[in-house]
Amino acid sequence: MLMTGKPIVSTPQGIAGLPPSTRQYFKIADDTESFAAAIVNLLSNYRKVNIEEKLLESIFGTQVIQEVVSDIKSLI
Image (cartoon, rainbow, N blue to C red; front, top):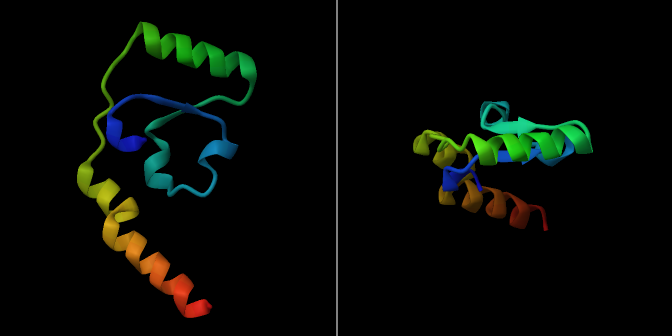
C-alpha cells in the first residue's frame, strides 16, 4: 500500500508493528470522526505521497521477505 503513492489513513492499531520510519507516511486517526475527517481532507486536498523506494525495499523488499521465511522455516 505504501508503494502506490496514495495517502493512507489508519488507526494506531493498523500501523502497530510497522517500523517507525514508515509511520510518517500515514495519517493516524484515533476515532471514527477523525478517521472520516482525514479521508475527506485527503480526498479534497490530494497530494501524491513520495516515499523513498530504497526505504521500502529495505523494509518490505523481496530479500527481507525471503530472510523472514527462511527464519520461520528454521524454527519448524
